[in-house]
View 1 (cartoon, helix red, strand yellow):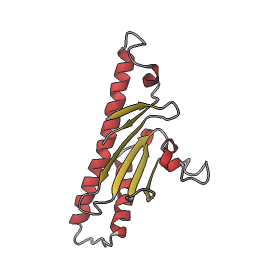
View 2 (cartoon, helix red, strand yellow):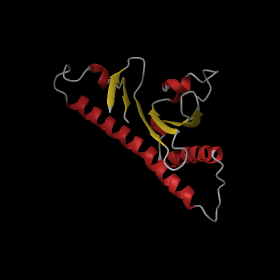
View 3 (cartoon, helix red, strand yellow):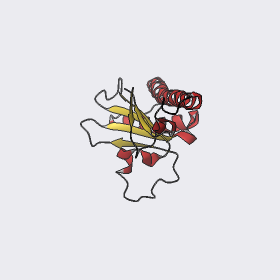
View 4 (spheres, one colour):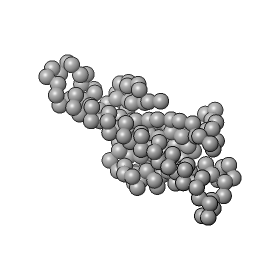
Length: 163
């Protein structure tokens, strides 16, 4: 895990992985942030500053890099198991459609396994985000000397990324 100070960024937890079984050359990236627009790669795609102001999460394909990256951004305040599943379904549908998999209600085991993996992956990012927040809250509340922990950490102005 890498922690960096960025004065112009809010706290963002990000994890990227390859997609097993389906499209191993492509990636899935999950961001958990205070606001969707805190994620620069998303903010740069907007033509209207007010676009998506009422959204709590978004799923989209980023095709700018060497490999397609299926991206999910979820606002920290609104994250829930239901929202994770909701966004995971969007990503699953994008992936399955792109490789020609037709969903079959009488043979849904491949879909179920993939959804299990995807929801577990997104949930692992959420768990890491909660763990980091808890550690930060404890460190900031217990410090006896304000110089022990840099002030920017106690104001939550840092960037988290783990691989």
